[in-house]
Image (cartoon, rainbow, N blue to C red; front, side, top):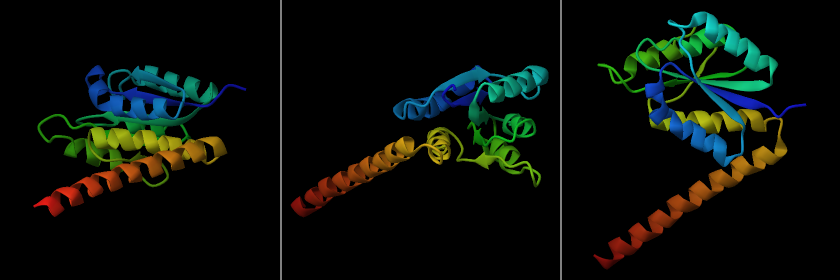
Length: 169
């Protein structure tokens, strides 16, 4: 059996700088992924074909990034019953607020897990996908726990340095 993977779909190639954070997190955990530019509006048949094929090949989570009208995550959620994570991209005159609303306001029964606008959301999408996969993978679950502990240690180290600076004042 092939190892499960995450599909990272972007509505435009201009989304890659934002979505690099997702790819980096997936790489950190050794999670196999495919990244693709596809559009809910301009290439709906190709989007449908890819999602169906990816699911058949072992895709367990779809991460979809789009700006403006941002219907990619919703379109994908309408095709698959695999978890879909939507990343609203911070672009356009509303700086991603329109994308956030388009991504989060799904009809009942067709959920999209929506993360924050922009690169913080893209990073969290990678972590959320890892946590979803970790439900059935104890080794990955341990790696996620270790990463969380490492992050906590980094915050504590920053606080220690701040306390040293404040004590010297």
